[in-house]
Length: 252
Image (tube, rainbow, N blue to C red; front, side, top):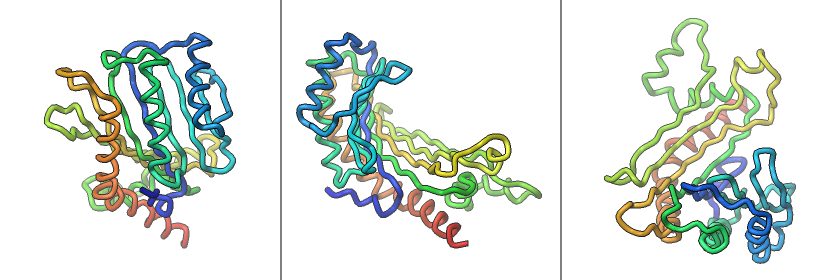
């Protein structure tokens, strides 16, 4: 399936995180062997580095605006693609990481805390992000009454909502919208004007507890669920209102 979200935002991210109960291996040979195996399948992933917080990362060159990445942290493994031409481009990398984790990083079903699949979007806007979010998502809610008061304006609108998607609460969905530039911050400190409003939707799956957790099977189900909910709920009720308000403000 092609990535149909590029026309709705400035950048689109498809990410996966496998969260573990125990710390992941940090031995030199194990870490290098894991990333070398990934590079063998994705030869263009040639940028390897370790961050200040001891996170290991292998990624493609970012300058094109479209790149893959894989990270190895203390208690989670991440992988994703920025601006994929099709969802399957990201899914192939995610599946490879899940395939390799048991054999190369000793992650078995008992060690898995949860599995996250995230679709995220960036909306570039140099103005007041909180104002955009308030107008797009809160204008018809009870929160809007606070903005009717004299001399009021939004300075802290970054909503995040978590819902259970199954009766046992082991499948959960989180929608969050992050503001990075407010009307207050530019007066208190320097603020980059190229920051974007970020919307992310994550479906997290916890192991059932009654049977062996199949990470690959769960991943496929979560991808299906994320795509369905994005199309039916997130795009019409969150993405389009944000994009519309930003477009209107750019014209004024």
